[in-house]
Length: 300
Image (cartoon, rainbow, N blue to C red):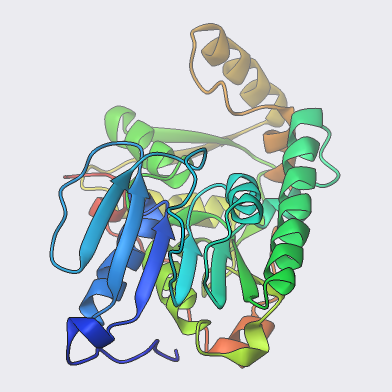
C-alpha cells in the first residue's frame, strides 16, 4: 500500500492533520500511524485526553466551530459522516485534502424493510454528496472510504458481541439459513487505507468500498470467531422459526435488541463489494479473516 508523506526531520516542516473520531476504533489506529510518520496532529474528543508528542487534543464535538485561520494538509474524519459533512460545510478550515469514513450501509440499507435503516442510508448518501460539493467549492479534494463489517479493536458491535456471548456461554446459535456472504475488515487495514489515499490523485472526489481480504459465508465467519476463543464454544444452527422464537424471548429480557427483522434478513443476503478500484487506485491489500482473541475483546 502506498505510504503517506515520509517523516520530516523537524517539527516545523511536519505536515499537519486534523482528526475527528480519533478516540474511536479506526481513529486510534490512524493516530498511531500519523504520529509514527512524524505528522503534527490535532484531534477532537468529547472527553479530556492527555497530549503527547506530536498530538494535541481538543475537547468538544462537531457542534464546536473551528478556530479561525487554521490550516492543515489533511482532515481525517473517522466518525459519523453526516455530522462531519455538516461541520465541514459550516467551518472554513483550510485543507487541500479530506479523507472521511462512510459505510457500505449506504448501499446495504438503501432498500431495507426497516424505515430507520433506509433513513441511515439516505443520510449517508446525502453526506457524501454534501462533502464532495463543499470540497470542490473550496478547491479541495475529498475521498470517502466505505468499510464493511469492522473488527480488530474489540469494540465493534457485531463480532465482538458474538465472541463475548460465546465465551460466556460456550455456544452460539444461528438460524440455519444464515448463509449470506461477508467481508470483515480489520481496523488496521482501514487506518492504512486512509493514509494511502492522501497522495493518490486518482482517489480524489471518489468513494471506495474497503472490505476485508476474504469472503466468507456468515456461518463460516462465526466459526472463525469461535475458533479464536480461549474457551471452546460450539455453533448451533437451528430452524429459522425456532431461532425467531428464541430471539423474541431474549428481547423480552432486554437482550439482542439490535437484532431486528432487517438484520435477520441480511444474514441471508450476500454483502460483498468490489475492492478492485481500491486495489488499483491506492494499493489496497487487506488481510484475510483470522481474528485473535484480543481483537474480539477477549482476554484483555
